[in-house]
Length: 155
Image (tube, rainbow, N blue to C red):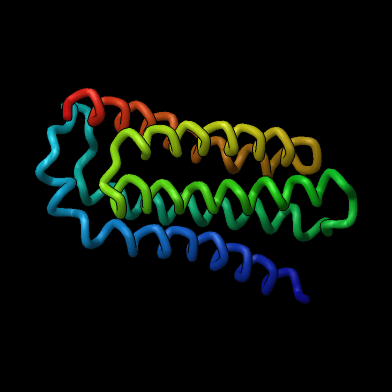
């Protein structure tokens, strides 16, 4: 497969995780808007562009590993942990918005944070650029974890 096609497939694959998660979000926005939220919550319009950029960075990161091939045990492990963290990422939207469970969302987002950290570590062993591309994602999920915890405490 040509490199440019691998890049496109990688980005689309990651964006699909975001699209899947947004399915659970749409029907619960009224519930979410009614919750008490902390003063440091970003404006609603910011979430979509931030996530689109983060999923694009994840896709580029995945591409950098795919370009090298998934033949070694390290690269296979990195791919598995990467896909699992995308599943957990999507699960957060289902639990927090779909199930309207703030506490459950907090548990899932903490698991997600650990999985992102493990993914960065696994990617770093193979391609440092691929690992660094995931750092903004870890930072955003750190912030989102604090936001989730604050919403839990306020409600």
